[in-house]
Amino acid sequence: MQISPGELEPATGVGTARLILRPMTASDVEAMLAGAHPAEWAEDFPQPMDVDTARMLEDGGGAFDIATSFGRLAIVERGTGLVVGTIGFEGPPIDRVGELICSVCPSRRNRGYATEATTAVVDFTFSFPQITAVQASTTWDGHAAQRVLVKCGFTPLDADPDATFERGYRRERPATV
View (cartoon, one colour):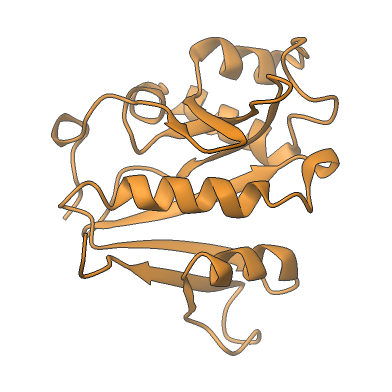
């Protein structure tokens, strides 16, 4: 079962102590695709994964990803106002499960931003009663991302690197939500 955009609320931002997670805008996508670098972006943002996301948004029309709560969010440092990464979902939830993706630019890694953003987005996601779980995946050698997911309550699904291209993780909806 795929959840349609009409069943979801319009995109809203999510905040943490150090970060603002705001919806990506059409101008963000256009700038990434044009190779532009607005002043409000960290010097090493966007990363190739972010540009790939922008390309997918353009190819798909972008309406779902920008216009709903299960779209992409820009990770903005409160202290500087700079965009330092993206977080969000691969698309609409399927079978009541969202597929999370996150990218933080190298100059802002090892500051806990990925953990902070992931926690905030997953907590927000579980405010939707139709969502029962969130999944994510990493490369097998993506140890930092794996630590973030485990710290955020995700359980590894795969144990054999020869059997799968990526290592999957899943976090079930808490019983208390």
